[in-house]
Image: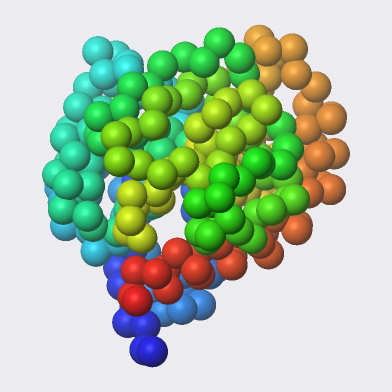
Length: 235
């Protein structure tokens, strides 16, 4: 089967939370990448025109539209897109936005989940592109969680939160965790989130050591997860 290259539109909420290891995978397969900045660019229009869409993470809450009005446009565009079953991948805040757009509730979970740990895959998760993550520590970096949207399949959970990933058909995949994190650029996370880490009493040295240990392996596995998802779009 011949897989046609697409233009992948990427919604970015924070400069250093980028495509990470996903970028090389996409470019190696001939896909063009368009990056739009939430709060700066016309994100709603970009979501509407996107062939494939990736919505990345950020430190704000889905429920903070009164403070960050651009979230209203982003959510409305996501609702239109998801109702049309267009290819959409969300990571962390991106997954939460997708959950909200699909009718789920997003809210503070009460516990910061920051660090590297394995997922528990559901039966559906073991049959999804996430099967490659079995036994592989991923990066968690969030304090919010969400209720599973009606009709969605839960793919994974963690010891802290029950809903870590869901899908709605092959086109829609939402990941609460960071699968795209890279060892080479992880220091940017530690610098950029220094206030959050200090407030949560988390040890920067320990997080850095975890990344050095686990991030290289995650990069390899993450590539296969993305490839499998893309192949499903072209099936």
